[in-house]
Structures are given as structure tokens and as C-alpha cells.
Image (tube, rainbow, N blue to C red):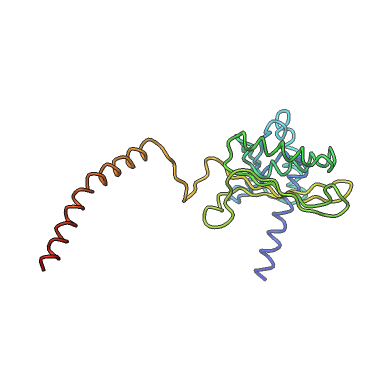
Length: 231
């Protein structure tokens, strides 16, 4: 019984998130997070266009709050907008942007759309990016296309810092699946070595020490050889 309740609760939560994304518009929202507090439900909407989502004097937010109360029977929903400062490093926004462009311009121009997105991400300073498309592009047969640039972790602990997202584009020939993976410049990597002045000074100091120790080592070796020869 407990498992059924949890599954039902998660289904309702997913329905709320999907409705918010659909009602506010595709390509405008990155994430929707729901936090449950004693006062009510706190819904955090992450976006790069807060003005369009809030509307004039918060009209859109007020209308959405009313719908969430009536349709999903939420007690006291409170919507908060969280602005994305660097949308180029948000994989969900990029994936949705590619999906919207494919639906508007058509699948024949998919290479132009993807290369523009790739160039924008790389120019912003991303360490690595990978974009995968799967579907009828441009032939009648379904095919996978991969576009990548830079350094991107696939496995291990460092792969967890890679921001991944999926999106779907509904075009005339058929459905196109989009996968985007971005490694931001501020992401923490365990095996990353930053070559700065401090590191260079340490390396130079170590090199000088080894050079000074070389004659002492040679003298010790000679003494050992002399002892062995006498014995």
C-alpha cells in the first residue's frame, strides 16, 4: 500500500511539473522543483526569461496559482522564479531551443541549428559539449547524428558534474530526439590540474633541489663501490 501511495504521489508531482512547463511555454523553463513546507507547496521555476513568465504585475503567476489550486488540488501553492545567469551552460534550455528551432524551420536545416548552438556554448567558455540527434534527419530512415567539441567526461565521479538533458521535437517527417551534455567551466574535476604561478614555482624549486642532490648521490655511490671493492 505504501508503495502505491508513493507512486501515485510522484505521478501527481510529475503532472504538476509538466503542466507548468507546457503552460509557460517550451524553451523558456529549465527546471521545476517542488518543496513541501508546513505553510504550503513551494514551487521553484528556473528560467532565463523571468519577465515573460511573471507577466505584467504578476498576472501569469496569479493565473497559474489558481489553476494549480483547482486542477491539482494544492492547498497553498507559492511560485518562485529563479533566474539563470548563464543560459549557455544549461543543457535543458539548449535542448528545448534546438527542438523549437527544428519544429519551426524543419529538419532539413538541423546541421545549421546544431552548429549555431554548439558555437554559442563553446564561445561562452564551456570545457566540453556534446549534442546528439536521433530521427528522420534528413532521409526517410531514422539515423543518429553526433556533434561534439572540447573535453567531456563519460564515466567515473567527474561525469556527475556534466549537465545532461533531453528534449523532443515534433517535425513533419517524424519525432526527433535530442540529447545535450555540457561541462561548464566552473565544474569541479578531481583530475584537473590548474597550471598557475604557484605550481610553476614549486616545480622550479623541486628541479633545483634534484640538481643539488645529484653530486651527493654520485659521491655516495662511489663510496659504496669502493667499500665493495675492498671487501
